[in-house]
Image (cartoon, rainbow, N blue to C red; front, side):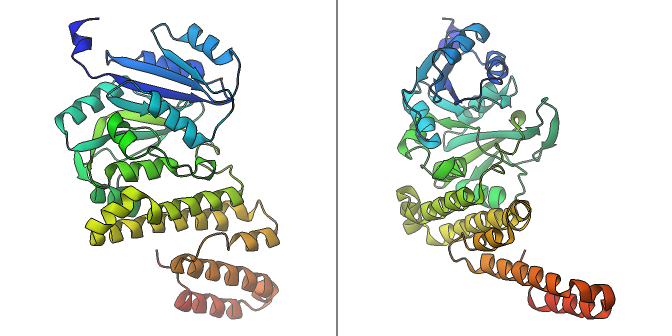
Amino acid sequence: MSANVENRPLVTIGVPIYKRLHYLENVLQTVAAQDYPNIDLLVSDNGMNGYKVQQAVDSYYRAPYRFRQNRATVSISQHFNQLIHDARGDYFILLADDDEITPNYVSALVDQLQRHPQASVAISLQETIDDSGKVIRRSRETNPELLSGPDFIRAAWGTHELGHESFSTLLARTDKLSLCGGFPDFWKGHANDDALLIKLCLDNYVVLNTQCSYRKRFDEASHGWALPIEDLAKGLRDFLHFLDADSSITAYARLHPAEWSQCKYYLVDMAWKTYFYRWAGLYRDRLTTAQWVRAAFGMPFIRDYYRAVRQTLVGTAVSVILGPIRKHFPGTYDWYRAAKRRHWNVRS
């Protein structure tokens, strides 16, 4: 081993695999292309695929690597936490099999965390790519290098000024990941990456890097759009419960009540809007009317959410009733729309 390698912190890149194997060659090439000299690749099979995964890694990855395999499939969060537990590196990256990182990703983020020992996690630019790998969206390219946890929560989920659609891949200090308990075990793993990042950053700092990128492949499953609405509701209820029950959060809230109150507002707002806009749009065409109306009540009581639901349900009902009237008496429909604007506006 060269002196250069020995002097650089070891970075574990964990690649979780379930049943999908057709992206595996690409993600392994992404890891092999890193310009960082000290990488511990750990591939984990959670899909009971026999010898297929290890044979594929042997074929596509020429450097040393480690392999683990579960005898029975565990939940998404449990699988991710197994990777953290088995990490040997000072730093850890979770990299989904269908995503990519630029060749300078590891080196750029490690250098920044080395310069900022008060930070627990480093985040790159985020690019959304299609199935062919073409970039279709990109996060903001002008960000401060260092943010406190509360400032990051505001920028990420309050104002959305960072422009990230996902925080599923990042570089974190392995000891911080273990100390905070890793990924919470939410239903279907929904929002567990956001929850982990909240725990990592809340009483720490976040480093932002605009010189390297994490590329997330867009499809309905990766963005959670393929979930049945019952699963989406249960996952978000788990997330909302986590905000009140997680021990690291409650400890922070006791010491910094005002800061946590503002952070929690942003996070609850993000959660209910995620559900509401998918319910009102995406799921409206997937469900029968009765199913859609029942699904409106899948969230716990949040005043702004149910205010938005009331507006949507009343608007839908009145539109059905007034449809023929609108056609023959357009002035009556215009009156209804004006009343709706005056009395049922949803706070944005």
